Every structure is written in C-alpha cells, then in structure tokens.
Image (tube, rainbow, N blue to C red; front, top):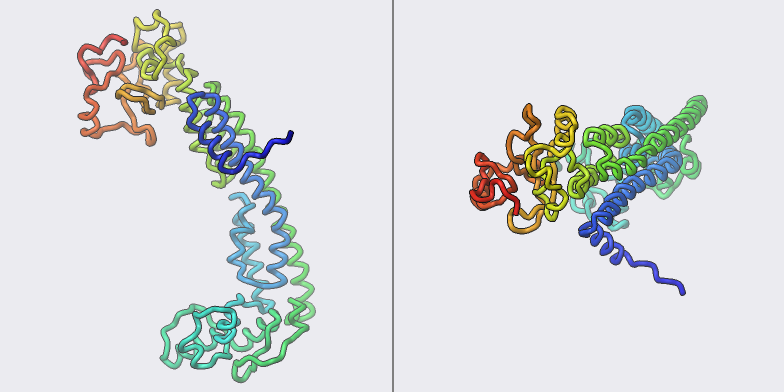
Length: 409
C-alpha cells in the first residue's frame, strides 16, 4: 500500500527533532543535510541563472528596459573573479539600449496613461497641466515655470521620448507640442535597430551576439567553479569525528567555499560540527581530565590512571610530546560542551588554556560566551554563579569553591 508523502510541516518537525535530539548521530545528520541543502540550493540557482543569462540579456537588448535592474540577476551567476568583466559588459548593454533609443518604460507615459493603468502618482498638477504629455516633459516644463521643485534627476527631449514610444509600440508624439497622437509606428515596434544607420546596425548586431555569448560563458564558469564546494560536506563529517582540525577545516572552507564568493554561508554548520566533536569525546586526547569532566555524563570516560594528573592532557600522559598537544590545543582554541556545572544542563564555552613546560594547563578553563567565544567578565554573572563547581578547581579560580577543589563527585 502506498504511503502518503510527509507534509511540509511534518518535515519541519522531523528536522527540528533531529536538530535538538539527544542522539548525536541524528544531530550530525541534521547539520550535514543543512550543509548539503545550502550548497545544493546555491548550485541549483547558479545553473538556472547560467541557462537564462543569454535569454535575459538578449531580451534586454531587443526590447529595452532598465539594464541596471537586470544587473543582479545577470551577475549572480558570476564569481567575484568575473564580476568586473560582467559589469563592463552590462554597461555596454546599457549603452546599446540607449543608442537604439529605448527609455525605461515608466518615463514614457502621460498622466492619463498612468491613470488608466491604475497609478495615482501623477494626478494633481501634472494632470491639470496637460494629461496627454509624457510626465518627464511636464516635469521639466513645470520646474522651468517655477511651479514645481525638481523631483527627477533625468530629462528627455520630445524626440527621445517619441522614438522610445515608437520602439515600445506606443502611440507617437506630436514633435511640436509633445502631446500623444493616435498613430503607431509598426516598423519601429518590430525592429529594435530601426533608428540605427545601416552600417551601424550590422556592427551592433555583431556586438550584441558577442556580449551575450561572453556573458553565458562567464555564467557557466561560475557554475564550474562553485561545484567543488560540494566536497566540503565530507570534510565537515570528518571534522565532526575529530579527524580534521579547526585550522584545517577553516583552510578547506575558505578554499572550497569562501573563495568563490559569499553566496554560501556554512559558518553555523561548522560551529555546530566542532561542538559535536568535543561533545562526543573525539578530542578528549588533547584535553585534561578536568576539561573532560566539565561535560555531563562523562565521568566513566576518564580512566582512573589519568585522574592523578587532572591538569595534564591525556595524550601527554600517554607519552605524546607536549609540543604536539600544545599545537593542537592552540589550533582548537576553545570548546563548547553541554555541562551541568551551574545546576542544570546547557551549552558552555571554555577556553583551552596554555600548557606550561611540564605539560600542565596554567590555569583552570576560562568560561566563555558560547556564541561569541569571548571570556565572560560580567561581575553580575560571577556573583550569580559564585557557587559553580568545576572539577579540580584551583584556589586562584574565581569559581573556586572550598571542598570541591580537588575531588570529583
């Protein structure tokens, strides 16, 4: 029997349940899917953009319009490396559109035509002065007569607006009065090159074809350059398992994703991936027993032979050089783990402190803001949590509580 496909709200609930699941494997899957979907969405959009660039650019050249309004959709498929060239090509498109005689459509309409379209912005003095003259011409006349403050920073001649209306298939203008007539220029309406000299017509056609082809090639290059970003998902999976260090993760992220532009933001995913790695004990070997025991339900994960040296990372106690462990700790810098040191479970950030010459941490972990990963210096916070119990706390720690400084409950 066929099963009904999950509704959108059901999928959202499933995803939310995985995001906050106590099962780390489900949380891993959620964040890997998030990364995969983010990249897939951008790549899908880039591919779509790449296929529509020739069509959009061609329509812009043949039918006119405001090329600047097309700049974002046309260049979104371009990588930063190519955007300067794409911008130059689009500027050239604008020049050709203007040379042909096109003017952005709203500037062509009279107050009466605006009214017929349902636009109420050109009533009042415009309509009262003459409802059958294009608004830009009325605007300049009223400004010259001192009846209106300048609103628009552009001006057009009667001849310019007449040509543009002809190309748009609108009625022509009386060149003497600027008022609309009942006539249409069918030849101009079906030929965007109508007002170009024969020799110039051939040049423009050839140049338009070259521009469209080059923009299409740039868009395709954008897709090709972004496709390797999909490989970052496998790297994030390894990062979650502690097989990739934070410096390595950042280098690969910048190389595979960030160097391509800012269309994909996986920073939240990478942040959660690191928290999962530390929360599931993948980095316990570079941590001290004290740091490991900050995590909830982890006491059995620290064998007794390590507890005699609570401030020495496990790997150093196993014979790994202090320099190697210090290098790894400096790369990670901090960790965020779920702790109940305040009496209830919540994520806490801790700085991985430097090691002294003997391989011991120079002080107990500094508590960090879990979002900004900056030390919490607020006196109110310290007062509120003055009784915080940190395993193996030292007398110099501000959260030191007598009776708990050297034992684990």
